[in-house]
Image (tube, rainbow, N blue to C red; front, side):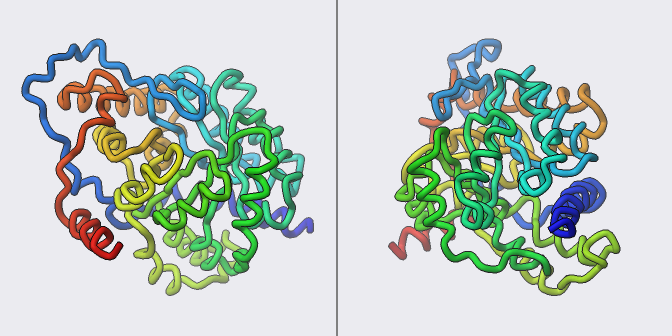
Length: 360
């Protein structure tokens, strides 16, 4: 058990370092195929554009959501501290990385609990893997939520990553039942979250039927966990360098592009977080027109947070300023009006959606 705890915690630092030092983005999320309709007579004032949005009964100053990135190793505590301060200052929500390491080893809890200390009023989402939920039940979910006094809990689905990890959890049976049990009994909302391979309409319907309160689609086209695990397998830092780099390379191209996943899932049930390859405020605006309620951002914030609070604040402000200008040029005074717009859809995204619609 001690060796397992060390392994889980060590992986968290490996992942953080790889994301900082290597190019781990793969594919095209599809935002280049989406073009917002320019309104040459917007009839609104840029200085009064309202970016506030509602999600699970909470009001955010912006739909930008700091997606779960890290925690579970002493070296990650300061990252979560700075991210939480920014969330509190900007009036936005934040998720934490997988809390498995701290659930296995309570001495690591402060790498997560620091977020509530720094952001006492912010919307915070806990994070637990579906396999860990199945194996340990609601007790672990309660511990994860209590660790950060969470407003919601994300149950993450990362089976591509697990399949590639030599030490991964390869048995996915029983996870849907575990999610349904959690949703029926838990005291805070449950978000079902993919981590980079996307969610289809069919899977979304299963999640809604299980009682999920929201879905984070985590689409393909941003951070590739196949690429991350492939790089980790090549280094001495990752389980002695044992792994399957060739398997990782093959599956770097696996998944549903973020835009396709968003178009499939939006409107099938409850609120949706669009995560995966959003790289500026215009991408956020596009996601909102396609049905997203929040826009999850992770990798673009990682290097800024390592450079300090001022650089992170500058990056977050740039995202929000770009969103405001895109709203203004679309003639949308607030996010509700933006969601009523419909963009041009071109290229491979248009072709894929035609095939999906034609096959139904």
